[in-house]
Amino acid sequence: MQRFVKIFTHGCQMNDLDSRKLYSELAGHGYQPTEDDRLADVMIVNTCSVRQKAQEKALSTLGRLCILKRGRPGLVIAVAGCVAQQEGEELAERFPEVDIILGTHQLHRLKDLVADVRSRRQLRVETAFGDAIPSMDIVPDKDFLIPPHRAYINIMQGCDNYCTYCIVPLVRGREISRDHGAILSEVRLHAERGVKEVFLLGQNVNSYAGGMTFPELLKEIHAVEGIERLRFTTSHPKDVSPALIECFALLPKLCSHLHLPFQAGSDRVLKAMNRNYTHDSYLRLIEDLRRARPDMAFSADVMVGFPGEGEQDFRLTLDLIEAVRFDVLYSFKYSPRPGTAAAALVDDVALPEKRARLSVLQSLQRRITLENNKARLGKIVEVLVDGPSPRHDHQVFGRTTHNVIVNFAGPSSLIGSTVAVKVTRANQNSLTGELT
Ligand code: SAH
Ligand code: SF4
Ligand code: F3S
Image (cartoon, rainbow, N blue to C red; front, top):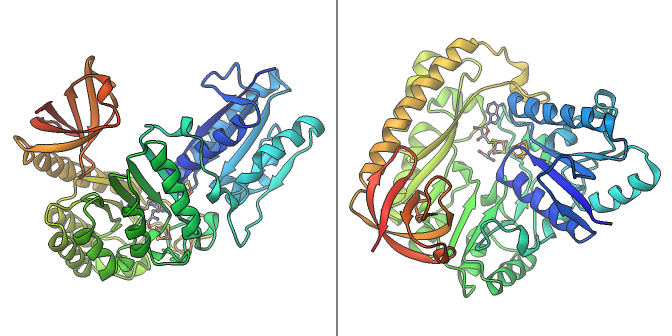
């Protein structure tokens, strides 16, 4: 009998990759992925706890599934990821319908736990941290690469930085690197299957230590035949070494884009966040990167309303944004997270003030994004074509080396290839172009 699984994914790219691995593992055990709630025999919520809102969203999905289960007692419900790690068994008290609670180091056990729960109907809670994370070595089957020419590869997990606002070190554990040999064989396997772009993932990739340094790993992957583009995330500004900057000068396949979260522009706030860099040293780093690769594009994360952030501190965040001219900024209102150092501080920036700052920041960034896009008008850009354009018939879309989305008229046979496109229109969040 055919069985079906549906996974709800919240949170970051790493969670997205984890979900693909879970789908792939279960597919190997006879569970076909489905979008249809009515068909699913197993439902998994892969959760995020980085901000209060993310956690609430994940728990509201879970609540909905628990109600579903009341009419379908055979349904297996699993909670995985960062909320599962943080809350553990307590989740089962709040959601008694849950069968499996799976922490971030235990994902490889899902298939066995599902089989176990189906036969014994007993709650399983697996949230131990280990010295290794076996799921890092799960390579999703090629059917689970979307698009098929891009492979996300986990090179490390966890974080030892303890930024005072951040729950990630608590829910992903300390930094654990995957062995470079395993990473390189995965890259080679993908290359043989036709993957063109490799996207390396880790909470803190610059501290990679799986038998070589991160810049050395980049060089090894760069040498793999068939791989045309190489990207990675996330980098901590304090760990961007001269050797990493040099990679942008030496490695042409390394894309001209870096996601470099700065969080705040005020040295006082950065210190309270335990970020270990300053406004000026961040700007110098951007300069050094632009010297190594003059057309470098940047994106970042930033938050407003950290405890004690005053109007003047916030101005310094705006100044930094003006100075760097990011293409994309992911901006958040600070929310206290349980167990973090900042949770002990008074959350003293009122919600309306956080909202107002966020809105000022976002409108500044919208202006800069559009100006950056307009500066690309008339240029010829190389686009790796990702798929059919979601909004326009007979159009496809892809990304430039700067990670900017370009839509243009062209056949879907172009998907997976890199083509030269002339930019004819600059939109707020994308470019429009024509094949040259
Ligand atoms: N490893 C990455 C990203 C971690 S989480 C890094 O080092 O930057 C993604 C983003 O969520 C962070 O960059 C930060 O901007 C935001 N974030 C983390 N904790 C938060 C909190 N308590 N409140 C609001 N935003 C938060
Ligand atoms: Fe969180 Fe800081 Fe680690 Fe990023 S570097 S995951 S923000 S503790
Ligand atoms: Fe969220 Fe966990 Fe990623 S807290 S941002 S899913 S590491």
